[in-house]
Each structure stands twice: as structure tokens, then as C-alpha cells.
Image (tube, rainbow, N blue to C red):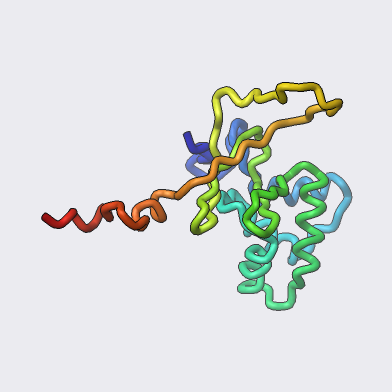
Length: 168
């Protein structure tokens, strides 16, 4: 089941909505006495309810559309601060770059092996524990399901494409 992250009809975050919105991130900075600059606001806007799990580079690219002078370093620094605050998650899902997730509730991920799309997924029983005691103190579990998203699966050779019925 993919996580439903809808807000109310005015776009405000529900109490049970795990996705951070721009005003949540803005408030987190202000509460800690950090400056909320126009660059940071632009970064917050890109992260606002963003379910795509963007990389720092894709966030930078999106911010450049509005603010051509923002540096990649500013994006990385802001993402690092948000991660340290617990406002977003930094993920290493094996896609070649860290990805950032504004959903901080416990959840897992689906990753398309072909196009790299990432989706949040709830796993009803994800209390996986090692079979042997290795001396570690376990703080959490991350499950990554790998496969093909519906779009890539439709284009897999030897599978009929939905828009083209098989020939007889």
C-alpha cells in the first residue's frame, strides 16, 4: 500500500500527515534561531510535500529556475541541517545519490531498477530482527523493495504492452 499523504482541502498538513510542508521547515529553522533566507525558502518550497525523493542535484536544479544564483553548496547545507533536525530523511537507496524524503514517519521504499523512481510503502509487519546477536544495538529497520514500476514493467520485452493488444 502506498502512503496516502493528502492534506485538507486548503492544503494544510493534517496531524496524521507525515509529509513536511514548506511552512513546517520554515518554522523548524526559526525555532532553532536559524535565518530563513530566500534561498532556504526556495529549497523548502521544492521539498514541500515532495513524494519524489529528490536528490540534492534535482532540488538545486528546481531552485535555479526561480533563483539562478543559489549554489549547490547552499542546497547541501540546508538539506544537512534539515536532516540533523529530523525534519527530513537522507536516504541511501542504491540509486547513486542521496535522496531526501520529507516523510519522517516510519516507512519503507519501493525502487524501480530501471528508471529509479522511488515510492513510500507501508509494511504492516516490518519488525525484522537478525537471527543472531552480533553485539549491535538496533535502532531501526529499512526495507527497500526493488523491481519495476508499472510504467517500466509495461515496456519490458516479452510482455504485452497494455495499449497494444497481442497480435493473433
